[in-house]
Image (cartoon, rainbow, N blue to C red; front, side, top):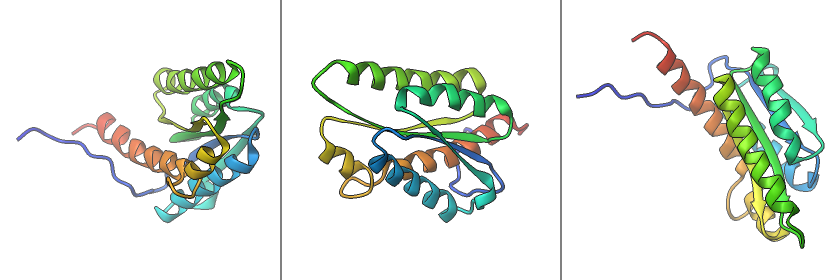
Length: 158
């Protein structure tokens, strides 16, 4: 039987940086609450959570990179909300935010999760921020917890 590695959903002293966009703050505050709640429910202390606010989703990758490079965090969680409008602005912001977050994780080796809602309508965003469709902030936090566990196992000698 081959060796299998599975991430655990238990926080054991890991430190998490959360970068949250102020744009669409009525949604991103709900994402932040969901992320912090998920971290705490899985054993994270308040002292091991740092929240950094940025103007918009486009700004998430730059600050996420600074946090990841600092060596102070085991994972970084990016939270934002981009709602489609009447112009192509949505595609630019959402696409660059997604690419930027993925790039940060790859170049730093620190797990960086994407908890950015991209929706066509405000109603869809509300659904993904804690009503019918769950909370994407909590989902991103759970992903960060699991990834810290996987990275630790992959990089530790067997």
